[in-house]
Length: 113
Length: 113
Image (cartoon, rainbow over all chains, first blue to last red; front, side, top):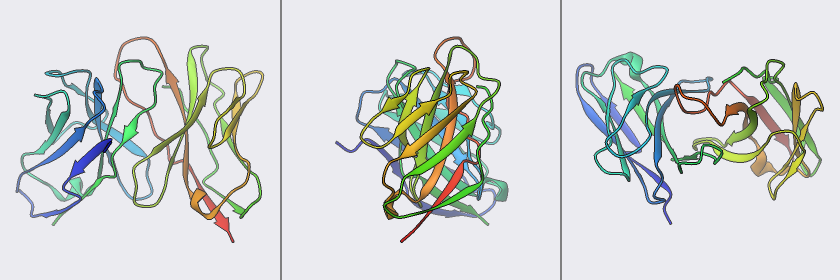
């Protein structure tokens, strides 16, 4: 049982390039989330999804887009990367019951030069 | 989600108990107290949660003050593998609005051999 898998693990982009981060979960979870974590900081919510075909903005959504075409996958896109988007990105998922804990992936470290 | 206050860092010795405090003076009656931890280079990991009564699981114990304005995460016998950042988070189980946990900076726990 893999849990939450994020690909890639590392990526270096030049300013203005685009890329997509993939999050896949095999637990049949309804809710999925994208967070970013900057050095010495806690995690900040970028976007989230409460089910297949739905997405919503979190605390810091600007510069990012997301899609949830399949229940098990949640994609985070950067259309035109900026150095301010250098960060570690974490994906998480949970079942529909809000009392249940979140399950996190091990992150994607992105550097934009 | 309401705000929590934790010490920036704490140090303990291996094989001794560790008490990690958290203040949440603005907690509401529907807020659950969640604890997560983040080991180096990994995503956050759920530890424990509770509402009013003290809780125990295989990882830790959670002691909640009678007025619920503070709580303490207890690691009964710390090992080097418990060195991590510990996050205390309040979570409502009802209502609409943005979903997802709100992470502060947490407490960096250092374990000395």
